[in-house]
Length: 226
Picture (cartoon, rainbow, N blue to C red):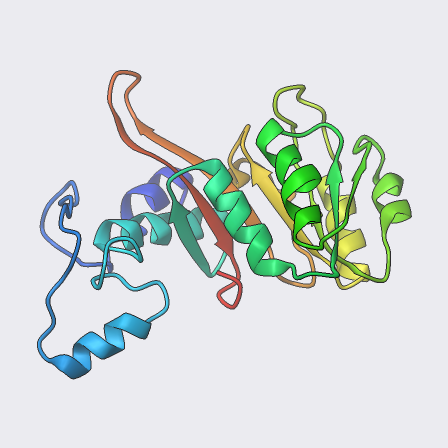
């Protein structure tokens, strides 16, 4: 099995392959098509690579290929920020009437989504002390759709038993989301896997301390989720 460095360097080799050692940066907003049929197909393609940069471009696709391989998932999607990734994931998975469980110790932006945004959309939430897995179990209701965990938490670095929460979620047919804001999922063997669908949020930063080649966040999940 290739190591992390090998995957990071070569996982995107089949995505818009070139002979360039460093992939070219695509600065265009739009892409042309051979004909109307090809354009129409690109417009409805999931995770398109060469239709409109807001939906995806070759560089996005290259990053996604690397992240998915590193996270051992089928697919990934990049966003411009951590809160964009988290909000996209949560809003895509829940609907009015669903229930979401979160942690008391969590990033402030995540807490705002749990305490302010979701209740306004008809999604009640419960925040628990994540230091004991039993707290998540006690908070479960028949309407629980999602458990949102963060370990270690930002900024207090409190630890959640990811494997125990994943097992709990799987047993109750609930999804689990893990924003890995303090470390990447590829650094942990305890990947969140609920109902057989792992879904993680990964912070990306590449380059030197003076110039970053990439600052973004990504969602990594099974293909039907991402």
